[in-house]
Length: 243
Length: 243
DNA sequence: GGCGGCGATTGGACTAGACAATTTCGGATG
DNA sequence: CATCCGAAATTGTCTAGTCCAATCGCCGCC
Image (cartoon, rainbow over all chains, first blue to last red; front, side, top):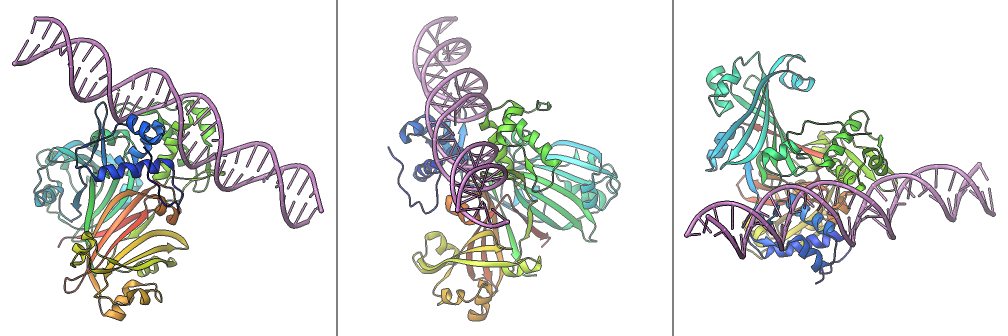
């Protein structure tokens, strides 16, 4: 078997021809179907296993394939769209009709780093809450979140949080604070071994990193959150309007 | 030399230890400084070149390093934040005090695919404009954009575009149409050989793909655009408010 | 009929090395 | 002194192979 020719206006590495071959196969199959094994592809296409694996790795990173050690490689489910709104995770999930839950990994008091202090308008070294949570949708991990809030402004927050899933609800009911606006930053990253373990993916996998800096009605900063989403599973949707 | 030990709560591939070692080096240097060569790292850390290259490739993808064949590997400039607003590219660039320009790659009439037809509320096969442009900031390529608009609604658009940089200005001045809202989708992708060539990066490099679906004041769809940004260079910033 | 073990299969991690393409820089040459 | 050339250094691409880890299915045994 040979790889179909392609106009080479732009230089193409050999692994990319393997990738195109795989994309054609993927196009004819439905999610969950197996694609040929690495060793079969390498024999059929006359390449080394390394080259085949590079093509496969890129397709996995793009969310087109899923690999399972000892089993095989399969066509992946399409990405899930996730809305970016000024509402809590719990509400967002309910709005899309999915079962959302949250696992509290860690809630502790820290001293503010320079970066946290600047964002929360505090002095460096001021006491802050650092809350790490895993967001789950339909019992599969979706995102890892680290929130920072002033410990002076929100005393006893950790205790309240252990009794409630929703940080926004605690802020409203216990402290009378409602975030009304936020500046959100979106960028690419790659999974650390720890993130990969918690998000049930591989070290180095593409990640969409969101950073949310939210404010209450008085313009006072409320929290600073960073979230790590699997880039192969999710895409974000936001609404823009002329001001 | 040996790589510093790390608590192994989470299994860590060997290449990741090399990556941490490099991150420490990067932390002590300023942008533009060279980091050790592949062969030096492989001798110092007692690993194969493949393993060293995997760590380097990940750091390049994260925008921490830049590699130049024949020359060496260098610490990269920090990422640039790019605002997502309901304004034209040209205006956005001016607002941040940068020199923006646009290179028209292709402007042709097509027949609408099913996807384009649905988004522009046309019949499949209806005539549409397909406009491909390269966006440059300070003379370096920033994004590749493909816009689709109804050819029936905007006759002679291609001709007007060749005389103006700004599509939004042409729409307003020639057709009296002003997009006022849009739904924007953000996801990760990887560069095809063609995209890599035009964006001056490598095949397979991480890409932030934006898809903008914009509407005029009557709620009529105006255009559907897909843009490819280098994920190692840019991050997006958007503002959220409670409705 | 069900359970357990074992071996084949598959993907995961890493090594060693060949050759190509590009850049850099010093030395020979005019 | 300026310019060109070529060797050395560096990254880019690909091959061939080893060993490991997880999975799956078959077969024998209870």
